[in-house]
Image 1 (cartoon, rainbow, N blue to C red):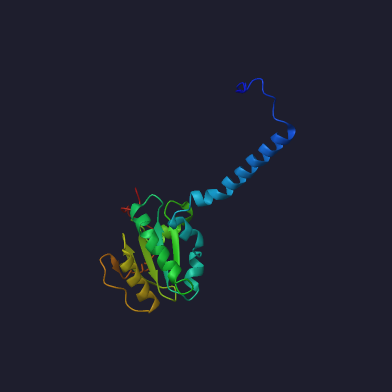
Image 2 (cartoon, rainbow, N blue to C red):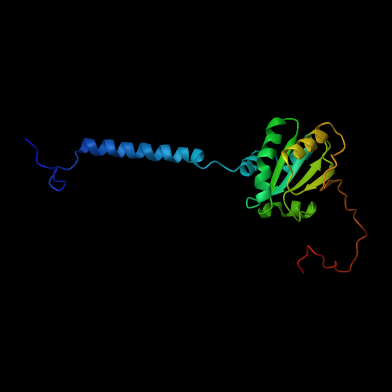
Amino acid sequence: MTEPPIDPISSPPLGRRERMVLAGLAALLALVLFFARGWLQPQAPLEQLARRSLELPVALANGRPTILEFYADWCESCRTMAPAMEAVESQNRGKLNVVLLNVDNPRWGPELDRYEVNGIPQLELFNRKGQPIGRSLGLRSPAELAAITIALLDDKPLPRLAGVGKSSGLEQGPQSSEPAAVGPRSHG
């Protein structure tokens, strides 16, 4: 004998116990999804490095060479270079500082001016005394980053790579009462 089909309209409603079990399962599923969202959408390597990096004044004063990278989340070259920068940081943790500053964060405006950032990625390279010894402009391969890192750690001259060179300090000239000339970065 076949049983008649169950009519959902005429079936009895869920009892109190079934509703509690369903509510508990829904809450458990919501918690699992809430805590798993970090695994579902991991942070980009740039963001992870930036969150782990020291404050720049601390890095420049702790007796380790420092690589300061100016980057942006939208920068394709920065994102391409990120895994190699992460490898440099993790392989040299405790021996070398890697500091990342996002050019889109207004907090870093003074640093953008101080280091004359006009393009990204831009690496500022500092010796153990926190003194600037060079600059790198543009995308760097893992091998180039490794060569720069070795030179910094061994206190040797920077490798001869296109876009890598000594940086010149700007001397404070005599003060003038005349207005400053409009330059290419003034947007005037």
